[in-house]
Length: 103
Image (cartoon, rainbow, N blue to C red; front, side, top):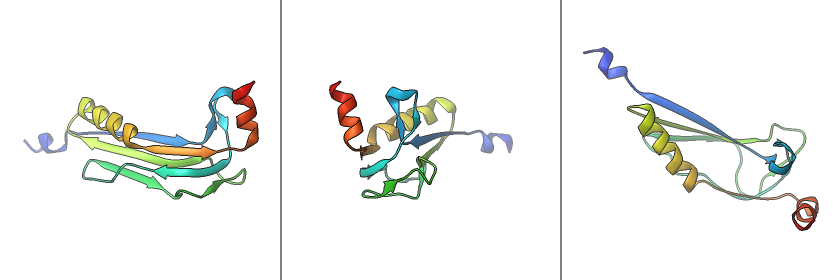
């Protein structure tokens, strides 16, 4: 009976600022919007940045860790999917990105 109390699953997802079209190399830029999902009994967001912050070449491009917890892996993954859908990030990376979009 005691073992039943400890059956649970945690899933962690990290959010990095990367160049998706350059094999996900680290990137820099200004976080125009950084709106993580609300923390709850099942969802935790560890972050040290907020909207308006600049991710520079001098620091790790990881902007947040999203941790979810629930009674089993399937339910935890469902919560992770919902949390990722709520997570809003918009970055201004300068003219290099804009040039890449139009060429």
